[in-house]
Each structure stands twice: as C-alpha cells, then as structure tokens.
Image (cartoon, rainbow, N blue to C red; front, side):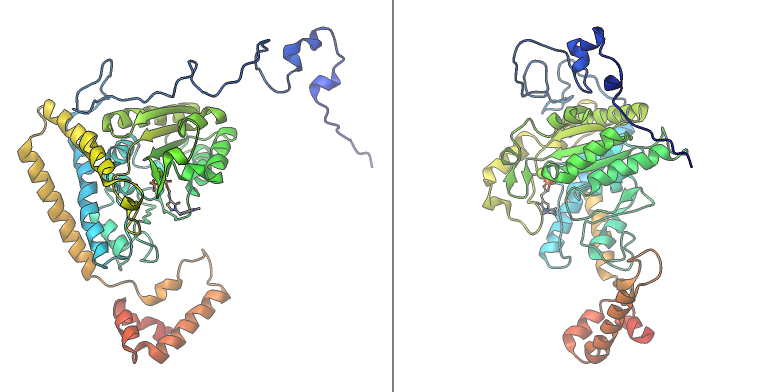
Length: 440
Ligand SMILES: Cc1ncc(C[n+]2csc(CCOP(=O)(O)OP(=O)(O)O)c2C)c(N)n1
Ligand SMILES: [Mg+2]
C-alpha cells in the first residue's frame, strides 16, 4: 500500500530566502503591523488617546444636541416607545411590592434602564433571537408577549408559558417570541449568542435576515464567558449584536472596581469587532445605534458590540439593599438629573405629541392593566405537581427522575393529606397535588 505523507511546512520556510524575502515587513509572523523605529506603548483604542466617546441625540431637556440627526420615527412609533418605557416602572412598582408582601419569591427591576432596553427592543426585528441576562423583560413586552404572561411566570402558575412555574421569577423565555430562557449563571448567554448567530447564518431562511442580540451587564463582562463569546463571534463570524448594559454596578461592586480600562467598549477592537458607545438614557440614541449595529452585523455577517451607559436606579434585586453600599443621595441625584423617561417625555412634548393629560391617562391605564393581570395571576393554581419532573430532558424520562418521582409520591402518601403544612402546600397545585399520587 502506498501512503502519501503530507508534510505541512510554513510557506515562508519552504521558499528559498531571496533578498526580497528578508524585508523586515515580511519577517513579521502573521501580521500586517507597520514597522516603526520609535518605542511607543499605548493604552487607548482612540487615535488621540482620549476615552471612547458616547453617542447622544437628546440632551437632558429633550432637545437635539448640536449636529445630531433624529432617527426615522413617526408619532405613533414614538408614542409606542414611550408607552413601553412607562410600562416597565409600572410593572416594577407593583411586582416589587408583591414580592415584599411574600406573594412571589423574587423580583428584579429595570428602573433607570428603560431607554436602553426599550430602545434596543425597538431597533430589533421581532424575530431576531434575543439572549438576555435578566433585566430585559421589556423586550418581550415590546414584542407583545403580554403582561399576563409575565405575571404567570413571576407567580409560577399554571399559565406560565416560560417554564410551567419551575423557574425563579423574571427567568422568562418564549420560543414564540424568540426570547431564549434567562439563566441565572452570569454570562452563559454570551458564547451561546455567538452560536445562535452562527446558526442563523447557516440557515438559508434566516441568513441575511435575522441577528442574535445578546444583552449582558458590565459585571457579566468580567466572566470568562464574555471573552470566549466575543472571540467565538470574531473568529467564526456570525451576525451577533452584543449589547452591554453598563449600569454602574454588579450588585454592590461599582464599575470603577470592576475594570481599569475604558469600560466594555474598549475590549471590542481587541477582538476585531466594530464597537460603539451610546448614552443608554437617551432612547433615540439607543434606537439609532442598535438599528445601525443590527444592519452592520447583517451586512458584514459579523458581530458588533454596543456599550450603553446607564445607571441602575433600583436595588440589584429584592435580595439586596443598595443603600448599604451607595448613598441614597447619589441615587436621588441620578433620578433628578438624568431620568430617561423625563428626557424622552420632554422631547415628545416639544413635538406637540404629548401633554399632562396624556401622561395621566397612560399611567392610570397601565396601572389598571397591570393590577388586573396581577390579581388574576395571584388567583391561579400552579401546574400539576407531576410537571415538576417533565421536560427535564428531551427524550424519555431517565431512571433517576423516575426514582425521584416515586420518592415524592411515597412522601405525599405519608404526609400529604395528614400533615397541615404539606396539605396547605399541595393545595396550591392544580388538583391539589393529587395527580402524582394517582400515577404512582
Ligand atoms: C457565574 C455567576 N457569578 C455570580 C453570580 C451572582 N450575581 C448575580 S447578578 C450579579 C451581578 C451582575 O452585574 P451586571 O452584569 O453588571 O448586571 P446588572 O445586575 O447590573 O444588570 C452577580 C455577581 C451569578 N449569578 N453567576
Ligand atoms: Mg451592572
């Protein structure tokens, strides 16, 4: 048998060294870097050594800043933006208190980040695949998921389409609305997004049409998965739009203790990724930026990184009291000086599209709607108890889950109807948790 042995030799080494091959520029391994004779260290990605600038359209009083161009929006679109922005604090006010009353186990607000979340949602197509961190419920609401579905998820009741009540509140997901289920471990969505982007690129029906949009906090960008995800998207190109919400905190750690470099944006060029920084409290700037990022990502089939500068006005979650590590006055100042809702509202008023009466009508209407759905969600039972064990794996139920089901059934038979704490708990499930008893 004759075997062909292929010996891979670097092309440069296989050629005889002619005089032209000895030119210094050709001796650099795999780089087009120009040769210089002056020793020069650098620590900035801007040519003038300045911080990366922040793109803004509206100033704090809702007026266009010098040279700014309005994105393409009409009155009804602008009002839809504002309405969706206002829906977030309405949901947050009610659900935060509902958690405090012990009716749901956990909650996270988006106070202060309304413009970043809704501006991005509005710039995406409704079937772009979204991989969020946890504060991006507004993307689903923008797409028409519905307050009822959010409530059902937070209460984990029988109408929860995200996960049949088996996930913590705010861990939303919906294949119908192209929103990948939130998972608690930080940054896992970042490499996943690069993979989703690649899958979109390989799908003839979605290539050139859909992007993967990945939201994450600046804190999550300290995880190894951030770097893995950006490197993946850079070396295996995919239409993936990375949106970093830089809200100043990772729970109690302020951003100035999270990194020494120029925010998250400075890392994009390191991966050869087109990058931009935007004022995350200016909904029109976010809209224009993410629209352009999305188009660029589709046109080039490559990743784009957006860093939205904002401020987390609320506590990290209901498990946190942020006044233990930041002054109440700092938060009050931020709310007063730069409230994204006020900024956009002033813009709408200046266009003659909004007034005091419209504001009051909207707030009352949203509050009434949210309350109606809250009351309904509260009154519904949880899914059947046996659902606890379903859908864990795609195929057949493995032996270990069967064993757990049987064990629970044995315990329920022993205590379920005779011990009050168990009886009370079982009563919260559909059919009073009896289905598991019947099955086993
Ligand atoms: C791998 C991992 N480490 C730590 C945590 C705990 N944790 C949850 S949220 C969070 C802070 C994240 O901050 P950031 O990414 O800036 O998002 P923000 O909460 O500001 O929106 C931390 C440390 C976690 N969920 N997963
Ligand atoms: Mg943060």
